[in-house]
Length: 477
Image (cartoon, rainbow, N blue to C red):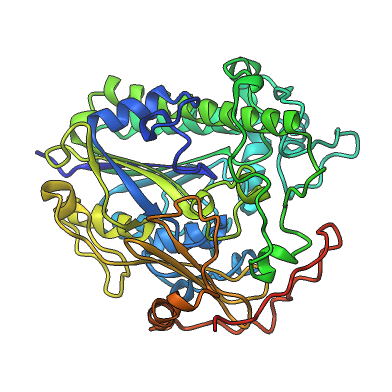
């Protein structure tokens, strides 16, 4: 058999539970479900950062955020100076391609970070390729549905969470993910006779949460249940959540319950839209006769709170924000329909790809190959880590079998008992009976953690939208 190909599909902001194969009672993801049915689904996988750029930069280099140097989105223009998935496979003789969102540090018009072919990378300086593809008018129309882009002066302003559950007003053939899937399919057709590494960056279900009408029609908002902890107290949290004026939080009165249901329906519609594009690529892989010799992996760069804990977006370490789906199909390795519960991280993907393709991985990787776990359900590790620096505080999470602990430098830490409190409703940091485990986990989370210089990253200011602050202690006692 020739060297296996790699098809890596990475979506954006897809929380782990929002898929049929993960047991969601509402979300329809038939293509993810069939991928899981033909491969292995991991149930406890974590992003290296609960935000796009740092997570993707860590993933593509196989190194912790504090090692690859992509601490925040302010650092995305800096070349990491490290081998990437793409450069490693290109050096090994693979043709490499990336279509859609990559958003890794150092990527630019002149620095391809290892990809022979690139297109439609909307969150990087290469967004001009999308403009050339669809024309200026359609480009501005789609960008009016994206965060962080100043829309055309005549463009309509939209709420990113779509509380009216409105469809996108743009023909499907001009939508970014559709085009990314089209270009990925062309790549498969053009390179079917040579080993390839293909990165497909699907932008959805990242807000703005607008999809074609037929996907919104799949979900009746009136039948969607609100999160059980929607209106729970949030007063025992660090400033990066509690006092941050740019963290998108839903205080009571921001949306009505019906509007929240509309927002949730819109998110599910975008998940299903993304799933259809993934399915088109899987179909093309099979039609080209490539599925028997291609490793297929699906993951997302981080999750989405979607009104759990009165929050939207990510930017924290709750399961909804930092937990991600991971589905692997490796010919000759994975057992169809199998499930693995080991603690895993997106850092494990690079060593796994190298191991499966017989490529020597670079030294210094922080992940582990998943092949032994996939083959034999063997143990993998006792803990995983994630980091966040965007809001001016050095924060790091450690997740063990039972416990999740978050160290927020100079601020309130967090401890959750995921065995007895899986929704993370009670921060146990102040409870006297848990001080020994707090000390043990704080030592673990700080071990070998090279905290960056935070002086150039401004701290958040107090948020007047949040009501009266409660008394909070800066450290565990």
